[in-house]
Every structure is written in structure tokens, then in C-alpha cells.
Image (cartoon, rainbow, N blue to C red; front, top):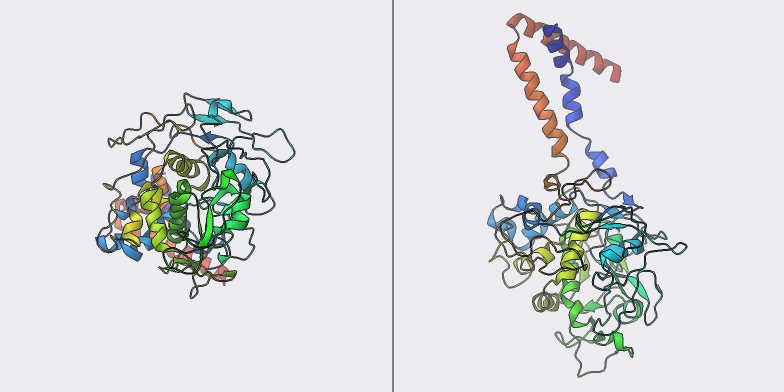
Length: 466
């Protein structure tokens, strides 16, 4: 009986090897499959320091030259796209609904006030959450939107006026879709990537920003400024840095947020490595320029990049307006609940300097030791974010690992740092080693019998295929 079992296992050897190596085409075909529904269990606790560092840990084994300049940009792309979830950008309400969580003003609309779900402060979790729509009794929290002066009354709500009016909000593409991925694709991809798709004042989005490059405005010259109190500080006019060209300058509190969202876009969507990506409207090829002259609407290609400027000013904004608690929490909420990837420039703002700034090809990214931005205050009225600058790696305050997110995923699983293709391969390797051990334990005579049977089975299978 033992001998028959061994022979049976060895007969499965070709099948095990075939199953262990997944089809590359299958991975490519599903690479940008869009998601049209959102999870109903929401984890509010921030990602721990140890888990954030682990997310980027594949960089640690690389040479210093691979962790600076364009090489760092290239290697970050591999991390950011691994396991990334993509959301539909179409007439569905998915993106609007996501704002109820990621752009929620957790001070004005704390988690304990949730009406369309059950909030448990002990686990920092909202369960059975029901997203709003235009036709039901919806959750309608205050939002922390771009271009809104939060020193005055914030009238921006998730399901308010979605038009270009004084208090209306739009889905603001921080990197304008006209600059590199203009085709109106409704698939998942750059157009619907919530890392750069924020709620923003509709008037500023459509009129002041539109598709202009970012930069400081020369206020000594003629420029346009909105007449509303809540829009003060958002300017459109001549570039102060370059002396010519029209740029858009957001209010000071949004400058760093916008810069880091743009940095993310170039890190996630570039063509610096031959990684099998097809460059199209869903997966553009983006870069920065020191220019204030944008091009007409177009979609990038392998030879034509989508451009954004002014890089000099964006780097300055990253320095003077570092990540605050809201931006950090938004990054964690997206990673844990929606996108499965992170914005590295919120986690490590200095990495922008290693790629484009004053430390390019001098300094290099070190996920193990680089200074990590983490929230230091509660952000939703109840949740005290875990970490808070603690370097011990303690995860005692984080319960989200204990309960899998919807769909069976562990929200902060270390498996996220492993390329998906390695999981089945690793399993196949283990089985292969087991079969080799069994084969070696057989007598010489039985090994010959097994070899003969396996060879015969392979030949028979080959003939059937022909």
C-alpha cells in the first residue's frame, strides 16, 4: 500500500509542476480589472510602523544605486502595483462613496456618529457599513476637501452639490487626466486611482486649476483669484519661478498633499523598466518637467510621456508642508480598506529628494531606518492611531490584523510584500521536494519502474494534445 501511494504521488509530478507555475497571460488579463463595489467592514486603525517598513522591505536587499534616482522610481513601481486594486471611474457611485471614508473629516464627523453602520471603538472598526447614493438615506459626513479654507465653516459634504459651484465638490484629478491618460476609459487604472483622486471644490477644480501645471504664482502680475472666502489662497496666474507660463497655486495647506500625490503618480505609472506593462490610458507613462507649458489632451505612450510641472515648486511644497495627520490617515485607510498599496512619499517624504531633489544619487532610500511620518493625535474622535512615532515595532494597539477584511484578506498581511506569483511557486517547490525525497527512498528497481511509468504517461499526454 505504501508503495502504491508513492507511485501515485510521483505520477502526479508533471501536474504539480504545471499547476505551480501560473499563466503569465492570466495575470496580464486581470491586471487592471476594475472593482465596482466597496467593502462593508472598515478598519480605522492606522498601519503600524513595522508593517509600513515591511511593505517596502524588498528595497532593503538592493544595492544603494538601486535605491536612488530613477532606479528607486523603477523599483517603487514594482512594489506599488503588486496586488493593487483598481476602481471603476464611470457613472457608478464607487468613487463618490469612497470619499465617505477616506476624505471624511474625522474631527467634524467622528466615527461614533456613523449612522449607516456599527462602530466598535474597542476594535476601531465599522461593520455593516452602507454607502450612500442619490436615492437612499445616505451617510453624509463632512469632508476634508482640497481648495476649501478650513479656517472658516466647512460646508463640504460627501453627498452635497457635485457641480462647479461655490460649495460644490468634484472628483479632482490632482494629476489632470488630460496630461497623459485622456482617453475616457472606465476601467481600473490611473483615471480612477484614489491616491490622486481627491474630493475638491468644484469651482477651483474646473476653473482655477483645470489642467494647469502647479507652481507659485507671481502675485505682482495680473492673476485670477476667486471671490469666495472659502477659496482664498487658490491662485491662477503667471509662474513666479519661471517668469512665464500659467500655473495653478493651491492654498498653503494643500501644497504638500498635492505634491506627494503627483510624486506617487510618477512612481506608480512610469516606463523605466521592461516589466511587461502595456502603456495606455489605464497605465500611462508619466514624468516631471521644469515647465509651465502643458500640452493639449493626449494619452501617453512608451515614447511620449505624460508631463507635469513645475518640479522645482512641487519639491519645495513637499518640504514646507509635510504630511499631517489627515493625509497620513487617508493613506492608511486606502491601503487597509481599498487600494492595497501606499503612497511612499507620505510614509517617507525624503524619498522625493533621493529621486528628484537635492539628494539625488547622493542619498538612498532605507526602509529599515529612514524617518517615518506617523500620526501623533487621534483623527476621528475615538481612534488613537497606532505607532505614533514608536520605533519598537509594537503592534499591541492594532487589532485589524486579527480580523480579515472582506474577501478573506488580512488587512496588513506580510504576504502583501511578496509578489503574488511566488506564492503558488513556493507551494509547488515544497511538493516537488517532497516527491524527490519519496523517490530517493525507493529501491533501484522501483525507481526504474516509476521512471518508466511517468515517461509513458507524458508521451501519452503529448499525443492527445497533438
